[in-house]
Length: 633
Image (cartoon, rainbow, N blue to C red; front, side, top):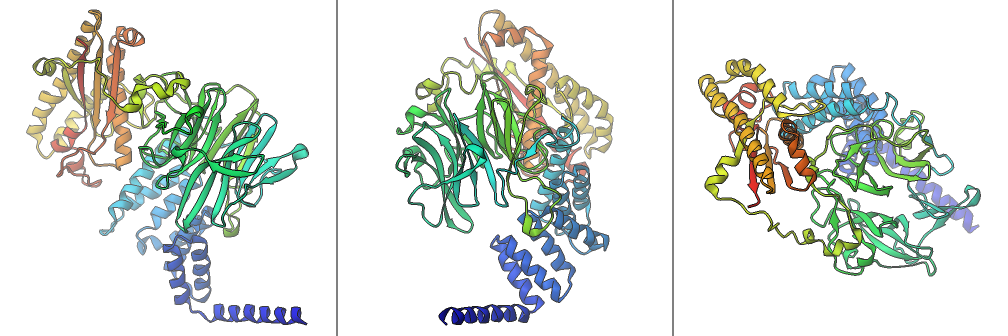
């Protein structure tokens, strides 16, 4: 009798909810959707916009629905709605529709279409466009150009050899596969647990004691058979989640602090990887003086309970670097930097060489997110949220899933073009030469090198050079950079610059007195370096790059890196003897890109006003590289 009564009450509550739902107007649903969107609850906002459209069709609400769907991850659905609006000439009524069209096309891997959409948005005749949107569109144009390049590295079909692991994956997020001896694990949101793969592919769920309702356990790295390192994420509110690494006793199933380094409330630490061969713990964090976003750090396993400062890897950038993994002296990691196919891509970096990070190309990456690369024996694993079976339902948004493949040939670098935000690190020693001596490394204290003595300032003036570049040179699509090529481009364009510059006579003087003279000064610096090296001295060459503010700040930072490399290559390729001395450790090259950071106020960044932002003397003077020679007396 009681069960029937409770059932009746439940039905009444359900019917009253349905009646309330149907009693709402289109405007009320739209307001509720707007509130959910601003709270970043994109799924609810999509459903509310959908209910609003059932009651009254409005183009503005359709666009909002598409944006909510895109933010939630239903890219195909969002693209279909936006395409339908564009077919109805909605471009004339909505400022940002091309912008979101570009986002959708980029996520789907249509880089040419995305680039075209972004360009349409930039030149669109709307006077109230936000500068932040313009910068974002320029940044995506740069991403498109880079993605077009990288997508050609291994054929047209991204991840074509990878197999969806149906025995591991579910409708929830499944990711971060790992192995330790005979044990196999991965993370999943299906039951807030670490999943262990047993014999016969049977799955069991590992969950430590004492987890609070607002805590989640992710990532699992064995220290040994009885202890592991895991990550516990605590939800502070809907928009804020803090993560820290903890020690998991597998015998008692209890959690304990890993050490003071990982028990700080103001930073997030996650994604551990234990390198047993070198006795190191790698992890990602937004603290410890990161360059921006998440960076990769490492510490010795012997120093977990000390106040040792973690060491940052040189591959870190102002973008996000995460999911570290080391195999045979090669670090694999994921990053959302511009030089990729979209989202997070997988990169490789040789730890014991003076190398740069290499994008592994379309054989490993797609326009979606690829993370958590692992390699055990001959089998490779990664996690990706790429589309499966063309699903486009808002209720079947692509979560992270685990893919694997058995490579038919050894891994090779798919690209040697140095697209890397830290090209300045070309001269540095390896990230990890003697891991067991991390505690004693002097660079942890950031003390200056006292072995290099600056010469007298008057003499130093003879060993400075400033060279100048045409706009957007070296181009992002160039396969190699050398300042001699950049100077030749300037020579070819000089008449065009003279005719387009608002100060024609002054520009002619600038070109003769600074551009041509700058190349001669660079040769003088180069020859002086060789002379001192022949005398048995050590030299350091500082190369600082600058740009005009015309493009996005991220693009300009990378353009500065390419200019650093162009001058670096010029110095070393003009006389091969410098390379010999560099091999002996007698030459140090320090490269830094400042992008547009130090541009004086008043230099135009107007993308449409090329006379001011490209051809003026003020803009031309910002496109430069400053070099200085320092000699060990």
